[in-house]
Image 1 (cartoon, rainbow, N blue to C red):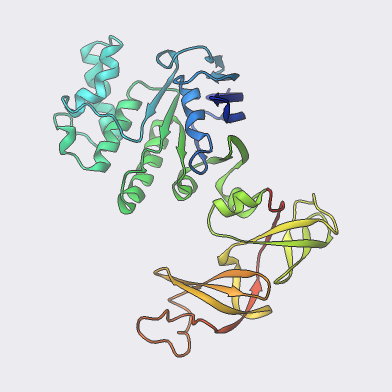
Image 2 (tube, one colour):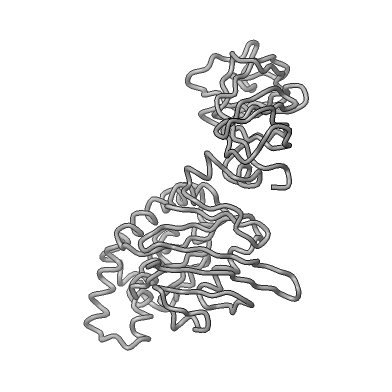
Length: 360
């Protein structure tokens, strides 16, 4: 039995369709992320699942029970908001036990459950602290403890890491994943941050314009995106338009303006079809191959350098590891030392994926 299932959710505001026929299923104990650009409908979907918004159509089930018509307080869910909403006049323990006290749980049981919840989020001994005196990461843990102390079937998280700086956000990703595993609670995490979703999730659903356009494990979505939009949204990708020359069901030969490339294929395309081909920068080898082009732009990215190569009709993004590659000829301090503009390079496309065309 799934922890949460939604079917055919639809929601409009003033005649504008925000969520259009969204269906998803979360298995018990799963870390599931719902991602997409701002305005795609992911937060509206989350609020319908939480019982904070009534859908115009569709059904919601939690632990197999229909809850579509039940308010949030009658659903076996809890929610962590982006702004956390910690009560400044209460201690850490007071914040965590608030829901238990509201539900009439005995004081002795409340104390025990609060201790367990704080230990789960690595805040044992912090119960008497003032939430305002804690770091941003510690406040995030308090919010998690407060949401988990009621033992929800599903924990709903709405962009909880968005306000943190990059370093703290990376630390909290690992903490969220650890806490989810240790608590064995089903997490539904809503974000526009692809990197966070990719690093934490068992499965991801990608939303666009109110609909789910692809879903699956992070590795499949990254390596085998089914649409151009997903290929470009999840990580960096050069997407080239082209025409299928031949296909055997597993691979296809596609002619693009930059050259011919053999792609991974779903078998749904045949000779003559107009398609899009996605190429990840890390799937391009420099210094050999049949493609040739001129570097037209460079970017310093820390441990690697990135270049845009004009291959005569299309541009391909290429990366070179700074620890392994030679310096670009004639480079001086202040210039990128692995590429130089107007440098002529050869390329080999080691892996490309055939996806649907530009309207995908």
